[in-house]
Amino acid sequence: MARRFSTLDVFTHTPLAGNPLAAVHDCGGLDGAAMQAIAREFNLSETVFILPPEDPVNTARLRIFTHTRELPFAGHPTIGAAVLIGLVEAHGLISKQDILIALEEEVGLIACTVGMDAKGIARARFTLPKLPEPAGVAGESLAIAAALGLDENDIGFDDHVPTIFSAGNPFCFVPVATRAALSRARPDLAAWPQAFGHMQRGACYLYTRQCADTAHDFHARMFAPGLGIVEDPATGSAVAAFAGVLMQAEQVPDGSHVVSIEQGYDMGRPSLITLGLDVLDGQLMEASIGGSAVLVQEGTLYL
Image 1 (tube, one colour):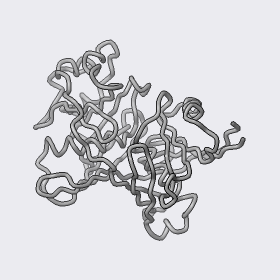
Image 2: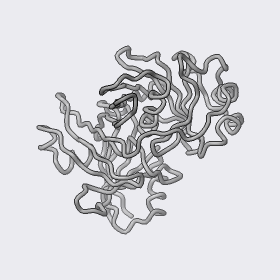
Image 3: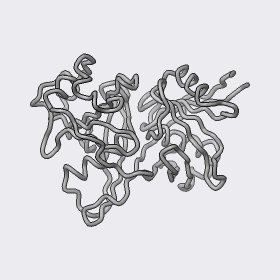
Image 4: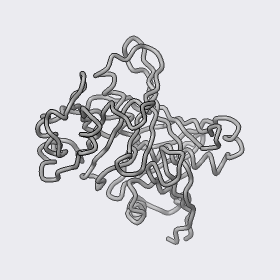
């Protein structure tokens, strides 16, 4: 059977940057094992399968796979799929106005807006279906530093200390004092279990205030060797959980805020993710993830 697929670069407005994503359109007859095999064939950090919705009032149902496992939620497949649906189903409309689509994922129903910027680059933003919450206690800074090839005094700045949060997928968030130290970080697989072995899969998100672009707020890297990801150029689900880090470590005032996070620069795939925060009485009421995506290729799977 011929099945259409597309690839997109997500969290960028430039092809061959950002985080690459494979998207399979025609999924009839595919079970989870077949989807996992296809994701292994693409060998990207994630592959998304776009299916008819279970509830016909919604736009589509998504299933998301790394090359080793299925995920209940991920940011760059959600943004990429939303942009792709907009480009394929409503190109003329999104060139004039934002549209709302509803995507079913294992984590829950996700509301997305899709549109185009003034340069004609498609973009999407979605409201988090689940607000971040603490997901355990981080290991000791000395062990974390050793697992990342850093010194203990490289870990932490201001009121930021290592923490674990999840908005669907758990991450250990590691604040790093300088961008130079962040660029030196390299996972040490021998030391990794001692620092992150208590976490399922041990995904680690490093961040610093020192940015390549001074217009941005944080610079980040993400390592997840337990997921088969040496490094990820843009990690939307981590940024979703990062909202919890900011609420814990910063004095975020009431109101609406946009935080910009750059990632992927050390991989030669610069990415930009925007995190929206709505705060009332010191509590996070709503959060969103946004970014651009560009279509790179289209093709056919014969399966």
